[in-house]
Length: 127
Image (cartoon, rainbow, N blue to C red; front, side, top):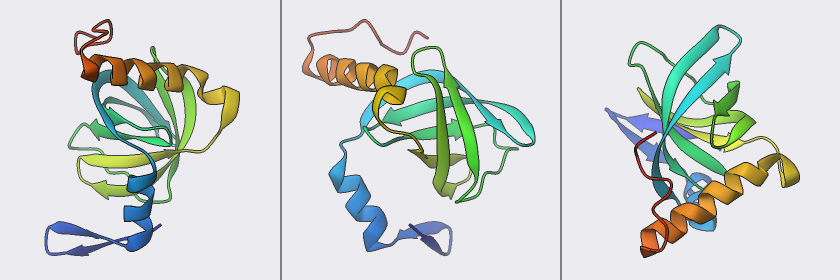
């Protein structure tokens, strides 16, 4: 997937848009640590989908599309990821694993759907 820029606004290719349509994004506010080859970065998971996450970091940090990292969260566990798009200080990450490795992420994702329906408020923004 690629992302081109036009001025300050990102332009998304059809391939990126197809990925967004395949997996519903659900808003959240989860504390996270991003572990790169340069060290650890504090961040926040803003939204979660079945295949990835939208993440915000300190404005000083710059991550590039294609860069691999480990996403660490109390709620999700540790998930290897790849940066798919970046609009500093936010970026989109694709989970680089599937199946059982994502069990905790799928559980949180399902609870976020319940929260949106008003049936479960156990995982709000008080993390």
